[in-house]
Length: 200
Image (cartoon, rainbow, N blue to C red; front, side, top):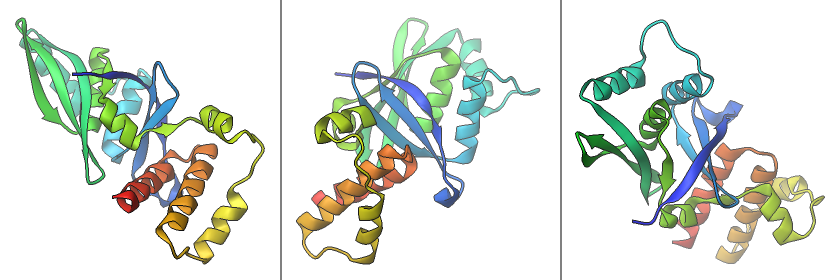
């Protein structure tokens, strides 16, 4: 199976997120980013480990790591392998006494576990092609105008909804560019899902 290696770029939130966060993965050998919407608890579990903060008692993912290690096993890597109806799917691939096994998992749980084992995070090319977002630098290269502002156009588009499918796609793509430019990856992920729905 072909896999693309990713890094954790960070966590993003906004006042309108309703307690959800966007976990941003960054393509290690490319320029695409993959925003994944996760819950507050999972975001906290990831943030604590990234910041090397040790709670007084083990949290759920710490407990899971301890149990896995008690069986002389370890996580080799996690693999975000599918995307269906806007929902990401992942596998935790682990070593069990020399035998490679895998378990289905939510990407947020898989990644929270991966960072505790210092295990790599991979994404399938199909998922990254469908849901990945070009970083701002790449967008600037494509558009050729780094100073272009999308905010005025985005505001107008909210007031007047385009009639044709092509026009709607153009509006959504402009909004997507604006969200990426403002580093609002949670909003970008939602717009990306709207674009995918419209295209399908």
